[in-house]
Image (cartoon, rainbow, N blue to C red; front, side, top):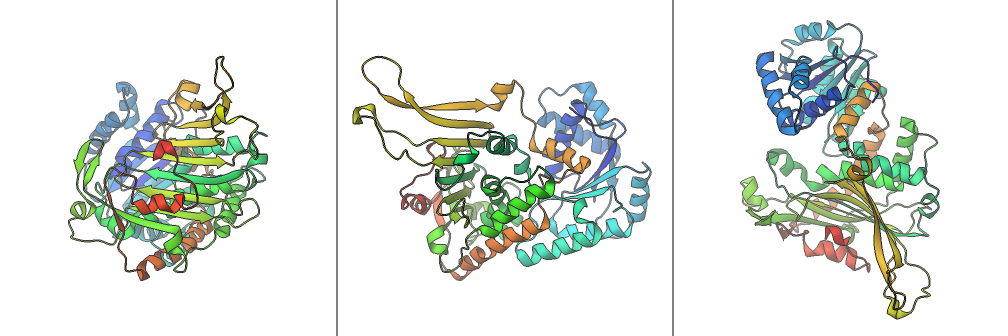
Length: 486
């Protein structure tokens, strides 16, 4: 573990769910791992004018909930780094005093994490510039969603760009910090075994599934104006698609990697009102059961009789270049599904000719499964001879590598890696503004097609894998959703 130099990390929205559930526990784990120096400062900023001591008490309980068996003394030492500042980010009052307080630590890396509603991004960045907090060692971290369409995303990027250079802007997507996504790069470009086969000649199709069992939780207001396409597909799922489909970068330099991802986004064949009915399915959950417990439908959770917002999306995409021509990428995501799972399935083509007798059984095509959550792992299915006498019988066997079992340690949370990458100034795992805008450029026509189609999202029972139309989407091509997630 390589420690970073002392830094300041300021969390706007420091009392919010993301800060308490993810950011502060991630920082504590890295502190316990010896990577965060004692001279660093972690400053929570929120509207309420609370005391630092009360804030530390809330942080203490949040970390105890998130980190099993947290060492008591280590936790108290970490809380010594934690400070609090009451500030209304939408008002000028208090900003001069806040800037003076932050500046007391002298010249060092300062990270401003905007864990707030997106409508505050522009105002906060403008005030950070106005009060001189945007110096060369400053970085700003922006959470999704970055806009709700191309026009709004461009406006946010322009405003943030007026305060910070692009090299200072870290647009975070925590999926890119997951161990399995990193291993996708290692598998493809660190092994001669896979890269020669990573093309349309050998791969039949790719599936990307991001499934949740939860409903709206505390996000009803945001979610009903966003929906699954904006909330999950435009960012997380398109980023995963890019990691699968991109060409080998010249190096792991941030812009080299992001240049290749951008090429994928620009190569996606368009989906619009002419073909959206063929290539997309949108659904909305109804009352049912998840994890064995009865749950309400989306309208009841929302408190409205009707809504056109989709809680489920399945779509068929294609990358229009030589490597991937004719290879469909099937994406699906939704809420109130039977299990929480995120995975990438690379389905190879069948062998061109079987030499085996029918009595040997079917020869199944090879399949590479990269599971991002809940337990990160890589599985490659192979055909082998079933042991024993009595003739040759074939059996599909998985070569399964669970990271926790293989390395004997729990893998770090994605935010642990990403937060320290921000401090180090490593932009590789963060989105560049042209990536964000290219993704919206592909998503916007789908949204427009749905708006012109009066048909409501298709209902599906909570605890099932979405509407039957999602099954039809893939099965009319003679394929089926991966059995472990279907």
